[in-house]
Length: 285
Image (tube, rainbow, N blue to C red; front, side, top):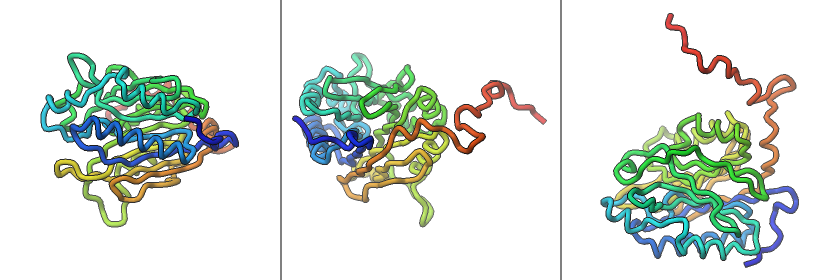
């Protein structure tokens, strides 16, 4: 499928985060849902598409057997179909899936383009009941070079650990794509969800863009934050999805701007770090 010239031709990268509502345990429905979302994003001339965590499987598994029935490998026909859908484009898709790792399962994210699966990242920080079904990944999150810039990948709870986005920033990421399933929690009136605030802080602290694709709907009684958002390198929200079961955030970004870490004529966000101090123990006074 060939799409019209993208925004990237003018130095702009169009990012589309699709807020989907998968059905837990329904692999056929969910893979079709994902492919439809990518088709919709391609029609919008998307350069980078981000889908939610565990898009292909759903999240609230009844038991390990249900999770296993929806597990796939990076060689699955779904990824073949997605690669074919991207043929003739420069579009990059980042999405979450339940990965069949042989004797174990992983909560994973794949980076896919017209050449196939470019990278698979296995979530390293598991949240709550995820520990009942998944094994945490043992390798640091990747940074993937694409025609649009360097994309780092984290999954949901990973973003709560400042070391993760910092490592990706140091590795040269321009944007961090975050497939996520944020459970809905109470918050003070007028406040943004804490997860969004955390993402804003990570973007600001590292001087890079962050694109979070949350999910919608309700799954076995679990409601979701529906916090899909794109955040700029200063930590400000540039666009969000409305609170709907399936909605999207579309944003045009100048990703190369994240490579300038200058905060003032005398300060640089990364060069100002005092790495000579960080390994020292704090004095106990």
